[in-house]
Image 1 (cartoon, rainbow, N blue to C red):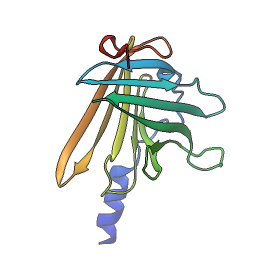
Image 2 (cartoon, one colour):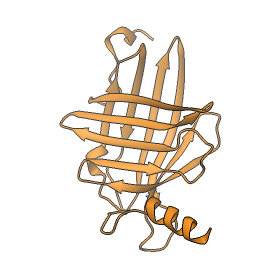
Image 3 (cartoon, one colour):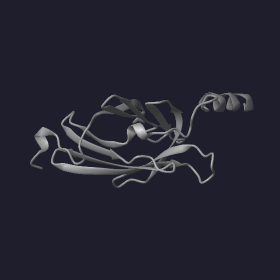
Length: 163
């Protein structure tokens, strides 16, 4: 049994040389998604001393929702990996440590197996920032994704101009 637990931990651990304190400056800025009948504006600050602050505002069906986020070290030790701390409207905060990173991609994953989402993934390609959440919801694998375009701060989707 101990061998199985050790093998499982080794498979879940980041590979050697994996940067768990990546520079995520490529995520910073204002981003806008106008897909799926929803308007989503996401904004990230430039990283400063291992801290980035983010916020998102979603408008859909005459209702607005929000989420506050930060990327910061998991604990105050100098070598602590970074994590995504999510605070969605009317929900408890959740911590997603970095498990994988590259020059334009980062994957955050929480330890709890029974919560959705399990993973938060950001990837940038030019002026497009893709965000995706993954996990199991009601016993089924589920993925929700957004495709953001670089935007001016407080930009609006064309259909949402009046609201």
